[in-house]
Length: 400
Image (tube, rainbow, N blue to C red; front, side, top):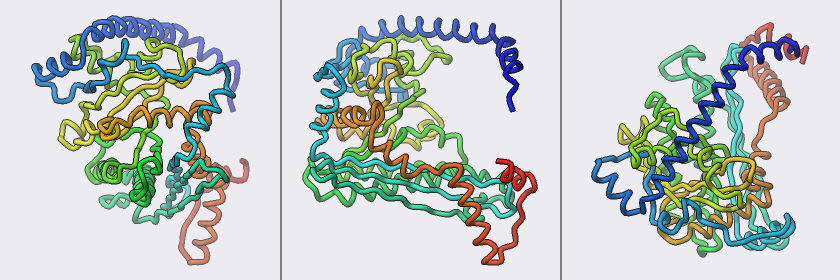
């Protein structure tokens, strides 16, 4: 239980540190504004030539030819509205007869409350055809992880075996597999009848570079298969990152201007102060060329096959990062797909409606977790599985 007065006193004790943090952040932003002004002097070919001359294989990002069509890193959005009703009418017209799909997941990670390790994950998917009559598909898939699947093969100890990571990995893989399934079943359809598939997150999985190979490899394989499936079936795929802290564009700017600052803010924060406040404007696409644990070890060939842009979806928050396989840009379909993303965000009030719906389907609440463990206890008793539960856990369940 929090003591309000003690919390206030503790915050006041750190007042100076917070002020120093804000001052340093403002200093970094000012420096980035100067870097950006210098960066904007160069066109696509000049940047490509400079990177080649310096032998930079992973400069953070690579420009696409969209850079030369942009004005100060801004590609405008053609439509304007007077109110939300007009925006919604545009969105519904844009989405009419265009199928949109999304997959999201949730998980129950193992807990030390039980002597028998157990985990679970659930994915939900939503497919909306946007046709008259409201044809759509909603469903979930639930999977339990037994003790052998939860604990690392190299350890019998649940804590050292990183059980949370194994459950998170399974969820990630199942989400990618479901998206591939949705794409494959639409492969035979005409181009405009194929769905736009949303992935909730980034295709650039730098976190896997910090993992042991037995955990990292399935993440890499899942993303490669997902991107390859989109390219093979020609079903458009988008990765949506609402709150991105990536520094790919900032890193590229540092290489071009030769002014590096490892403490610099991320792309989205920098662009928040640079892009016009106009809804729907975006940056030109850049190919990802991030240097991280995967790319250094030549395990990320798919990075440069992924392009990204930042798009303004609200004036109050930094722009969202939108990723897609490079084939969409090369086929001349990028702006068409971006309009579908915009329309989904209008319907979803700033976030793609399809992802919101998939999330609502997949989410596992605290009450759901309690019901899951109650069902597990009943199952264990029926199967005569010997297990114990900590007294602290039992006490919490009674008190809460």
